[in-house]
Length: 320
Image (cartoon, rainbow, N blue to C red):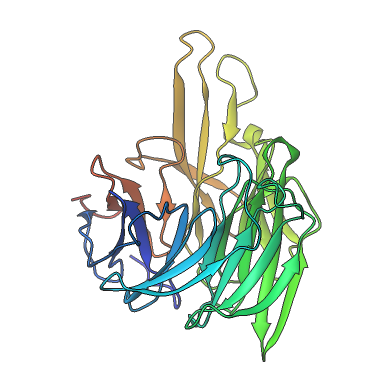
């Protein structure tokens, strides 16, 4: 197995209403037990979350804003989104921490929430919940996924349903907040390379995936479904919006589809050379479905057990 990447946000999952944190720095495989459990405040409906590096604080979003709790479940601060939403469904605020843990980036799908304004990306002081900056976005998103870049930035992928996706990059270097949008509306951000020099996107129409240079987004190469040998026919395939970097040199890519004769859904996981795009071959991810694959960048990856806790796999040894 390759050396652990320099920066890896804590792995956490919402299981049974609590935020569970797992140690993926240790060489432990099989179903993982949480090393910390952080409890949201009673009555809060958690729709997104992030965990501090020491697993002593959790940050989570509700439909109304962001909340921070400590390891004992004590509420340290609460930052409400201004204005009441109208309609419970179709909008899920999300959050992500900066690599140094000092700032929390909060995505607000205010347009879909019908708050009478457009979407926003807000920067909060992670220690106090104070609003440090707010950026008005041109998106009309249902939700957004945050990616923490090892160089200090945070990337956001906003899902706009059938209208596509938007990818943005936010930074707060030297106290100066900045946000830049990548020049496309049809690519979904899937993962960052362990060294932060590249990132992976999948076409919103699911016909291909592309490796881009960071930070500019220039395409290094694109691989289409046809490159895997699927050209329609009896077994039409698409690229799933999952996968990422197995290690610095290898991508994990998932293809899925429906067999025309049996009408059964299927998915297959592949290794792809992250430098050239050459398809290296299929592997058994052990996942429960096409979305159930989270590469860790060190040669191992996570799937999900029946319990909801992650299962850690590696290619060069036993899975449990």
